Length: 445
Image 1 (cartoon, rainbow, N blue to C red):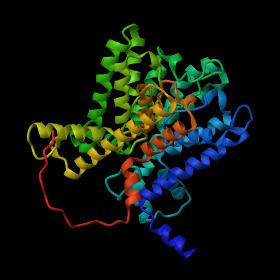
Image 2 (cartoon, rainbow, N blue to C red; image 1 turned 120 degrees about the vertical axis):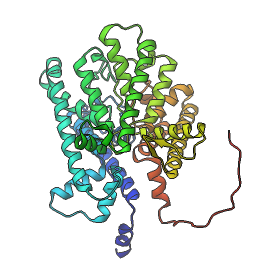
Image 3 (cartoon, rainbow, N blue to C red; image 1 turned 45 degrees about the vertical axis):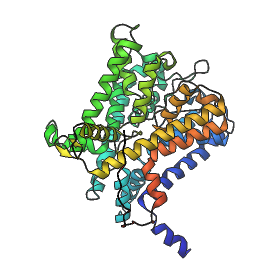
Image 4 (cartoon, one colour; image 1 turned 60 degrees about the horizontal axis):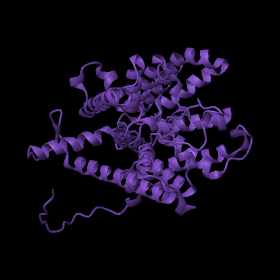
């Protein structure tokens, strides 16, 4: 007993985050296995429940069963709770219950919360957590109220539930939908491709949820005074705008050239926003051009921003790597963004994150392609969707074998907790080696 307590006290923040996510995923899978969770009243196989629970907690959206036609209202409710926990972060939710119960949060817990929401410092972390909770619930409720009239018109008494489910799923960048029917499964939001209310509301929720909690705080504190923002907030906002507009222009002129009017504009914008990392779609992705699908793969891998509900490598990682590229071209020693020098360790971390995501995304696709006999292109799309915690699919996931589903489960988990978090957790306690090997040059490029 003493040894167990001793080990528990020495768990690092990274290990607590990983164990927290794994624990919630397992609990969710066990609940989804219950007959009450499925419409047919049957026991759901463990691997299917585990896949669904992992996808919900990791706010991905890939599914092996159509959420609307297979799961009961209870099962959908469980999935929605898992999405909310995953979107806010397991540690944030646990800390919130601790605060509501009147207990004090220890320094170790504060440190874990700092890592969970990517806060720059431990000081004021409780205040930031309260801001996160308030803004989250306010925006999700607002989104639901805006979409409610449309869904009530289309679904009657079921409309409020539809509005709330899709609002939370969109804000948490989860991509789960309950639009499918027995004859038309995995429909997502294709029926609303020309509806500006649903499109704009869902896109707004995705963007706000994906820019990060600390960026909100900057916007709330400094309003429209962009110069007063933290450098990180400036990078996030600028990169987000670029990653929305440039792909949208491509989709508008290439993939959706056959559409006209507002549907063409909405489709181009929606398919530009949703890969980072929401998972909804209003168009048939299998009919998009190869170039369009390749752009979506890149967007899925990039993902959202640090401390947000989104996954992926993060916009800041891309910005740092691009800044380092420019510095190399200009033969400058340090990368720079918005008049500030980027620390060399940050550049190394960004390069490591890029390599990890590329290896996971490509390695997973090779395994699935080999195991299932599928073209590598469609497999790359699915693995990018999984590791980027997006949820977009070309339709192959429900028919994959057990091993391929396990690969996607691992990619979703790694994509949500973060590759560096996993490495830090595994290598914690190894200690720093202050000695250095002899220096020797090597030619690159």
